[in-house]
Each structure stands twice: as structure tokens, then as C-alpha cells.
Image (cartoon, rainbow, N blue to C red; front, side):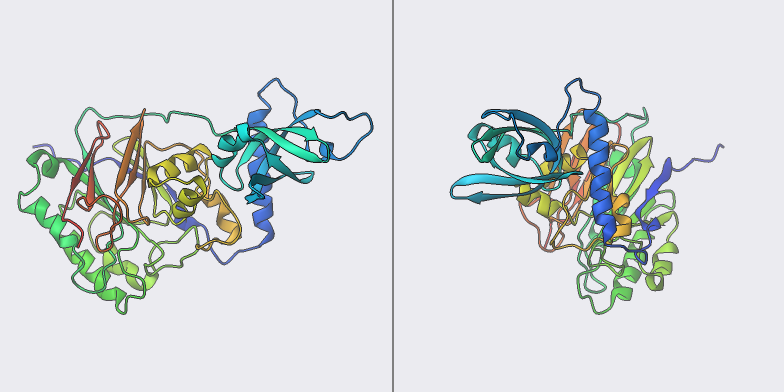
Length: 387
């Protein structure tokens, strides 16, 4: 009899390859310049010439109503005297401008530090933004569907404090026949995307030991992927390395287990899957004024970066690793946690997926595990309800 083979799996990019020991604050500035350069390469394919911020300085012969098209980064935006104002910056300098009513919607759809083409007009001593054109375009990732049906289970934010962490509830559903038979038979992957342990957990060793015991009950052929979050036993700066070496061996003893950095990209049955705990998604949601994490995730893909904003923020990023948060190839599945919200958005050949917290969920009260049919990208919410 021919031996049954396990599911196809390949680590494409491991976020843990960046070392937080090599940090230079000037690298943030260099990273913004590289981002602007990449945007300029995209804009260069268009026929219209572009101006620079330095062209806005007073010059003879300028007339009221003159216009410029400037490729720049949105450095800041704020309300002042009832009007929206922005500061934009390119390689030559920075400028302040007032946003016209017709351009407000376009400007509010931009993230801070996002490159865009701004159409500017002089009005007396003021510069007015007449239009803001984002460079992130609609796109479709490559697709590599398999005819054979295969499933992947995505979960995050268990926030375990000791030996009882709830993970066993989902594994029991699988092993005791409580899930649909075709799902249990064809479940090839289980992804634990950050915050397996709770923040400030007194005994993370007990948490990871219990997780290892529970995951060992799964078939050896099932691929298990574990990525850290800010509460886990790993440096919290982004990109994050895998779990600390003191605890890594506990989980590495589980057959077919991969301990990866945050973020990481893998191939599952021919599909490209971006696994990111999601520390920057909250700030993107606030900047965009959206309530669904998947809408912010779609914007991050549009600007091709998991690090859309610099400056004061509630997450730590070491400068040398900023490149590890750029998105070079688009995924078929983008999975995140951190927001504690369950959300799924399928578009074209892509699935944006946010999984809830097991202990402190926000938004819809649904089961804690997203089971994805990799042949259709359909999502089944299974597993125990959050406590």
C-alpha cells in the first residue's frame, strides 16, 4: 500500500530572521525614503510629469490658481478652525496645505506616512489640496488552488494563564467526531497566531507545556504553525523572533510543528498565507475610521506594508527590521489576530481573516476558530465559544 503523504507546506518568509540587536534610528528615515522611491517608480509609468515640494516656494511669474502635482508622503493631518490641514513631505522638503471640501474624502482615506499624488493649488498665501490620489491599486494575487479539498484552522489570542487555556476544547471537537467529518478528515493545518500566553503570565512554561500536550493529540501529519504575539515569551518589537529558546523546545517536540517569527509567510496546499499577529492593525483602523479589522488589513495590503505609520505608537519597532514588515508578494490568505474581533472578507482570490480572543472577544460573538476550505476560501466558524 502506498504511504499517505502529509499536506504540502513550505516556509517562504520567516519574520524571525531579523535580529533586533542591530538598530539605527536613522533607518526609519531611510525606510520612508525607500517607500517614496518605490511609489515614484509606480508613478513614473504614467505620462503626466510630477512636481516637487520645492516647486511650491514663491517664484516670479506665479499666478493665482497655479497648480502642481506632487508625489509626497502624508506626514500629518489635523483639524484646524474647522478645516482639515495636512503636512506633506518628499525628498526635497515639506509643506503645509489646507484640504478642499472635495478632496477631504480622498485625504481621509490615506494612512499617515502613505505616499500619494497631491494636486495642489495656490490661493493667496495658502496652498490648497484639490485632489489626493492613492498609489495603492486594486490587485489580485496569484492563485494555486488544489483540486483536493484541504482545510486549515486559524486561531489566536488564547491568553492562557496556566494549564487550562481552552485549546483542548477545539482539539476534542476534532478527535471526538464533533466537527463535520469531511473537515476532521481533511484538516491539514493548525495556525496559532500569537498571544498563546497571557500578558504578564507568571508561568509561561506551564502554558506552552499544556499547549504541546494538547497539540500532540492531533495527527502527526497535521502541520502546526505557532507565531508569537506581544504577550508571548518573545521580544515584543516588530518583527518578532519566534518564542524564546527557553520554551521553544517544549513545542518543537510536537511532531510537524513550526515556530516562526511575526510576521511570516507560508505556502499551504499551493496558497500563499501571510500570518501576522496584527499589532499595527488597531492604529490603522483608527486612522481610517473603520470598525472592521479586515478593512484596515485590506488597506495595509494596498500600501504593501504592515508598518504603514511611524512615530509615537503603542507598539515597538526596531529600525533595522522595518524592511521585514513590507509586503513584497500578495497573499491568498492574510490572517491576523490582536484586535480580538472575528471578521472575514473574501474578495477575488484573497481572504482577509481576523480571529477573536478566547477570553476577551470584541464584536460578533462567534466560535473561536476559523476553519478555512483552501479550495474555496470559505470560512466555517468552529471551536468553543469564547469565555
